[in-house]
Image 1 (cartoon, one colour):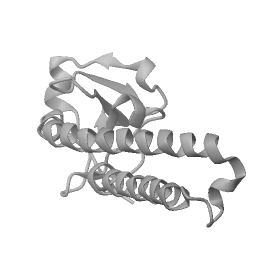
Image 2 (cartoon, rainbow, N blue to C red):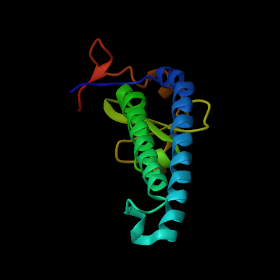
Image 3 (tube, helix red, strand yellow):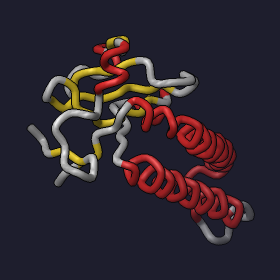
Length: 160
């Protein structure tokens, strides 16, 4: 299936949106952490009895568990819609470290523009198997030419 080959300009235009998405994910992750901590306290207090309906804190424990599941679902939905749905990807550890890869084409091959949360513009790229540690600084020529390689009229390209 063809994928979008992003130009650097197209990727840069998405940065404010991605910052907002990652803010939303981070806020939910903090809420998950809080609910998890409260659930751990109840678990320490009650042990195996935490799941017993006659436990006075049973409802609270169930509420925390439900909140965690709901927030995890919201994060999954945000990632699917706002990151993956745009043709972007999180590399390994990307969600935790705010890393997002934009597929593109350079010199006739598939590569990734690499963005880290907090960077105001796309400044780096890496080979498909290079990862964050293989980041290279974009040259002026790459900024002009990446994503403008062999692609169909929709800006999509097929795996070489």
